[in-house]
Image 1 (cartoon, rainbow, N blue to C red):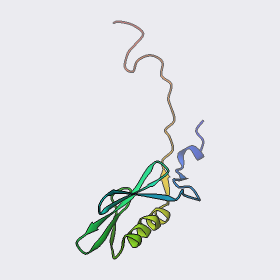
Image 2: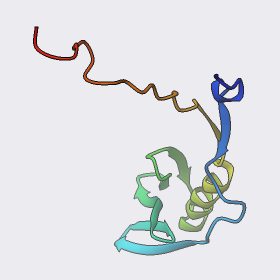
Image 3: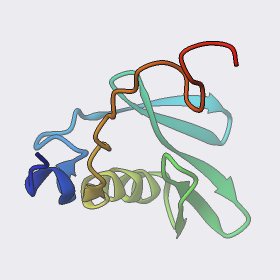
Image 4: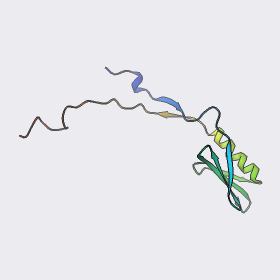
Length: 107
């Protein structure tokens, strides 16, 4: 018997309510890398017209006038970017006796 709830997708939250604060490290003279715990959270690098900010998946967060403004954009993106993901339910497993397509012995 199949349950109706097993066929419906469910929402799973991929973020916590209180994300850990970002830790910034200077990787080069004009490059700053952010981590949250042990996870990569984004970076800020010098560009020709300011400071470029990028999120953890390479999202372009724009060009900013200062390092602090670019870092705030990375931190703000991390908080804003937390949405729920719609996932499909796992398929029901079907138990089979023997190998598929084979009878009980050689023919």
